[in-house]
Image (cartoon, rainbow, N blue to C red; front, side):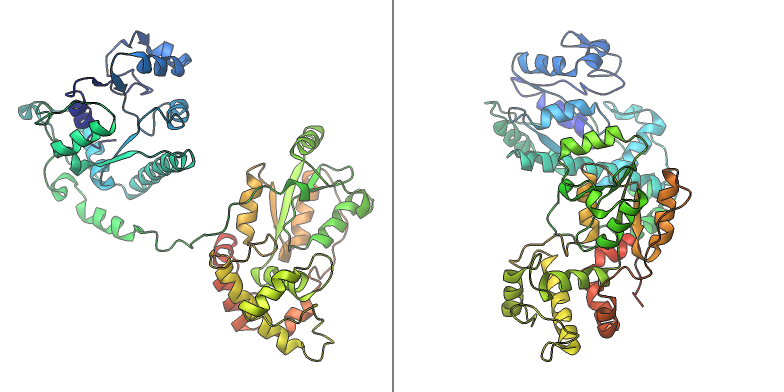
Length: 465
């Protein structure tokens, strides 16, 4: 909003063969305020069939288009963005300027100015929370446009507010549109609104400066995320034999303990649990179990990483990653013997060697989760947040339990399906707890936090001890 789109439209309409038809999909009017129809369609017609209006825009003589904002009919965005024959012009402006201009226009009711003697002005108050909400919506809209164009192999013509005063930029834009037309001067009908300095337009200018200074303009506090996007991993889901409980396991979580509990809820065995779901069979299960509860369990990042290390790198046999172990030993200094080891009894790979190798593994994880290694980011050591985000693509968990409060969390879950009692859980849910206790210290904690900063932040983890 308030990006100079009226001026851009006025200039485009100066070119022969080009017609910008206003805000064709504004939810409050069609094309322009107080206009009953556009290309023979009323607002009611458009509401029931937006595609029909798009078809008329395509069929009209010459090159036709419209202005579209982030609060317009979202159905149209889905249609237009994916159509490679629809040229996209993205007009941007300093968001503070745009926001203040919008506030003034809202206060004065003057959205266009053609005669400066009729100019209306009014100081407005800057609300930091309102601006942040506005900015987040704007950024989400722009990101959606960018990502959709990237995925469909398209590009847009980007125009900054300041570029609108350059007639050659306008001529270049129209050449990009494929129209053989040219103008020598810009439209002079519309006048710039609110040309005063920002300090004169905002009543609480000092408070605005303070609010903007607090904002993380360059997203410096964001924990970078370079992990690959993940799918929901539906084949790994586990359902209780009879109860409406569905466990969404994370690969290095306390899965054996939870599976035992899930079977015991129905006084059954682990072999009775329902596994091997496809999307279709899982949907069938969900429909057949009204009142179902989906849950997952997260654990402290130190335990998470140590479990992955013990099961996939230190151990040998089924489930271990022999090739990755060799690469870690050769390239990343993770000195685990070929064929694995048992540090409690091994003379060479003892607990001291295990600690040294685990610290090297944590250093590798920091690089691996930042997409700086050639080794895949396996689900065994991916951030738990990324795994849960992938699961959410199919369905969000009703409960994300925590290993350190598992008994209370499972009791709550059992109560939600009408159980007044539940199977007991062991005090210790980590089979490698003694091994970890022997090597854990502040150095290990710091290395884990360095690797899994996103999980510490997302789940509020503190130090393990």
